[in-house]
Image 1 (cartoon, rainbow, N blue to C red):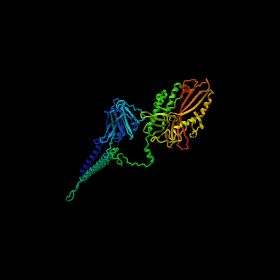
Image 2: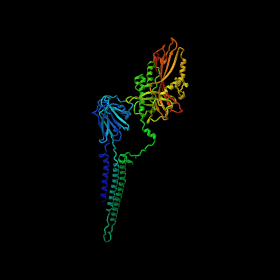
Image 3: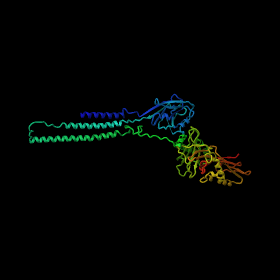
Image 4: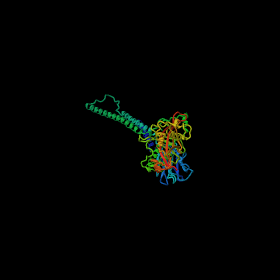
Amino acid sequence: MRFIVAVIVVVLAALMVALGFAQRTVFAPPPSVSSTVSTSDSEARITVVPSEALHGHDGRQTISISGSESDSVFAAYGRTSDVLGWVGDSAYNEVDFDESTGELVSTLVDGDGADVPSPADSDLWNAEYTGAAPTFSLDAPDDVSLIVVSDGTAPAPDTVRVTWPLSTSTPTAGPLIAGGLLVLLIGVLLYIWAIAHHRRTRGPRRTSGQGKPPRLTRRSRRKALGAGDSTSSAAEGGRRGIRRSVAVVPVVLVGALALSGCTADYWPSAVGGNGSGVSATPTPTSTDPVGDEQDDLQPPVVTVAQAERIVQRISTTAAQADGTLDPELAATRFTGPALAQREANYTLRSKDSGAAEPIAVPEGAVTLTLPQQADTWPRSVFVIVQSDDDAVAPIAMTLVQESARDNYQVEYLTSLEAGATPPTVAPATIGAARLSPDVKLLTLQPDQLATAYGDILRNGDDSEYASLFESEGDTLRDKIGKPYKDAKREALPETASIEFSSSPDDDSAVAFATNDAGAIVSVGLNEVETVKPTAEGAEVNPEGAVKNLTGLDKTTKGIEATYGVELLFSVPAVGSDQKIVLLGFSQALISAKELP
């Protein structure tokens, strides 16, 4: 009976181990699930896959795209509002996930069927992929969408396949294998016990004979003693063998148990029951009114990674344009006052190779990123970039994007003053509101800053605005302020006169709200110097850059030279006892002409 029980236990153990291994082999779940959508019956140039479709199943998405008539496929993902902004009025295929069938489906969204520009290298995208049939993986957040285009003239690629990973864990496999091995150990022990018991019951039995036992001779006694020694030795050897077996079997089984449990896929997840191995923690409901307000804020227009990539692209383009004196290339990344300075510089350097180059856009670290909170256009971003050369002052740039299909351009570019400390601003993940140029919540409206500061440059401390601005640390006043203007006026001969005037640049001031209810404001100012002869027959002899731009050695009519000045201010809130601080500036001759 003991042998039968041992055999049954061993068989049961074998079945448990076999079932456990079967769950990891023949009965193992598939590693992934896929769905393919076809848009072959659509002529739309664009396909959009929103996050809802990408999240049809849980897990990281692997996307494969093929079927382009142009043998060129472009795909990118970005914030959904940015993707739809770029699509605009164009017709496109919208991919959705059908929950009832578990498959992707496509719907044509009506719109303009005209060709679309290439979306490659747009500043909107978080990442982009190209190739004849690209395959890539991403873990799409809830607020992003995928855009797929061929070359803009051919229909969008007609096949999009999304693959999601499935859990291959078999939480009962480990317990079955481990339990089977444990039961096998019990069966082996039962079998050994049965053998030992059987041997004990096979010993000699004493018979009940009458009379005295036969007398053994000396020879017979020696034989009996020899046999007894042999039997004793055999029994002792058997016991040692049993002990060795009992000692070896647990070692083997313990090793097998350790090997069978080396992966978490074999075992149930930790306490929590959510399959993630971590117990779920409820998220408390916020009662903070500030938090509620933040939920209503528009998202920042770029991420830090996007801003760094945009600055890198601008730096590359600026270096190429500055090296080749190409204003058309510069215009792809510069606009407004910043472009005006570069265009004039290229003209000047084409005539005078010794002329100074414009302020470069360094390839260093972006130390501050302040994006506008917006989901419409135009939109702005303020950044500060530190050069790898510590001797070079950091530069501040105000970037603007006029439409979704335009890239960001530098509107204002200034070098920071030594020791300048920008005010505290919100983190890039929150961004800041762009204030209206005529907002009245500041010490001075942004659209009045250029006029007020221009008056200070002409009149110094006698200006009616002098009390509003901090003079300490303002080096621009020494360069082009009242002392500079007085010295230039005194240097002229009696036969000539000079007049100074200023006016705000045509581009609007760009103001970002700061944490202290103030603002960081970028403005442009045009400083005009007009030199005229005052006596009949007198001449004006332009010099330096003015001479090179006008191409004149002398004139009896006079010269008008305009200097573009880009200014960066920290403006406190209305009612504050703090003053407006000049954080940075750039100044350069942008035009010179003979008076009519």
